[in-house]
Length: 420
Image (cartoon, rainbow, N blue to C red):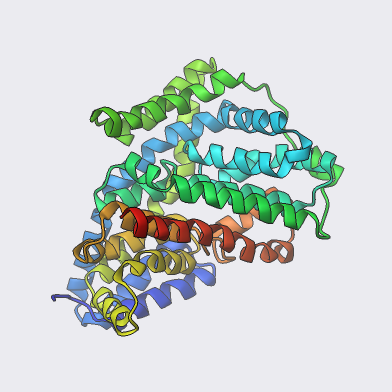
């Protein structure tokens, strides 16, 4: 058992980073400073600390490259109107009577094809509010449907968090996405049930003013809209089905190009790619900062002490996976940062304990969706703003969101116990 930093140092580093994030200091700087202070406290060696931080960030580069290229697909889906069209068709086909289910399914699919959860909510929100006003649903039920559906889609999507976890555990991205299909479906069902429950309670209703801000634009037809995502699914599925490996670094931008061609917008592809880059740049920079604190924690005694603690209270080692996902995502108020830190820190420990890498990655990933939307993160405010909700109203949804994330986490754990 070799480690360079003490458990105290690793914990101090995390606590300092969390406090700074809560105080609205830029998350990247918070994580870097937390790593630096924690490393010095844990070892007393500044050179070792900096070297470990740099090494931790370097381990993120392959993930960052794939995330940067994923922006091509996300940008074209959003700017061509393909994502909005997919959501519109789903909501329209299911109708007003099934509005909550329609909104949740739409958000799930939009997120599952590679759009970030907050962007998926922002994309679906205008459609959800419009049909919600006609059907008489309150804002809380509609927003929960969008967020819960997004959480369900997030754990089966080629999003930054999935990419980061697959890299940390060195497992196939498509296989990791497929591993959480059942947990995602269960999370979707719970989302719909909770949203229907909320719709029967008193809450702020959708007003005409909420709908006036909707931007009208010409959307592609449904076949054009799904062309890009369909190509990505086919390319990523080649590896598990035919053992033909197409890396996400290739599959995701190819899907974006196909989307632009299918929608007749290839001339604007450069513009869409730049837009997509602007959406993933922040996440990519965040991952570099995340790598610094993950490097310190990974090189500390923390993981060994946690295992000993679990053994002392007679808890199985595999529970470290979902617990790590839950706590790290809650600390950073970010699914991506939480899943990345959890995976980078405990991947070696979990696999050494005999837990299959795919199952461990899936449990960390699903665990990272439980309390990832706390107020010190941007997701909380972006989604609340999309539905025109006050901070007080938005706060009331956190327990319901946690129930959705906990559902997928519990099912992921049960699947590990049954299937392995």
